[in-house]
Image (tube, rainbow, N blue to C red; front, side, top):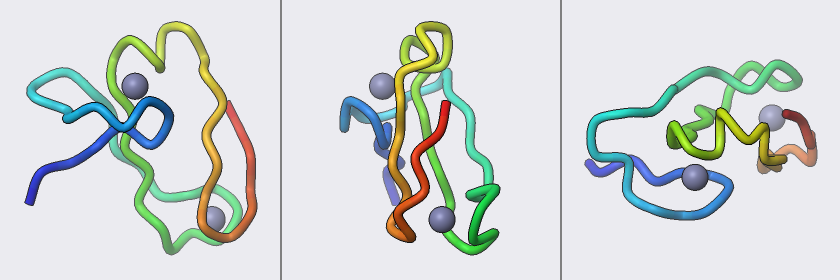
Amino acid sequence: MIDKCISCSKKIVNEGVKFKCPSCLKENICRCDACRKKAVQYKCKCGFIGP
Ligand SMILES: [Zn+2]
Ligand SMILES: [Zn+2]
């Protein structure tokens, strides 16, 4: 499985973070290093929007 950044939809090759949504604690959120550094917003399937 290839992880995609939830913000920019780019494939996460080596740098990136993965964590569970702090709201629903079910969905896995993947973000690339660039979006993490820029604190780009993401939106979980549950509707939670966060940095
Ligand atoms: Zn990204
Ligand atoms: Zn969620």
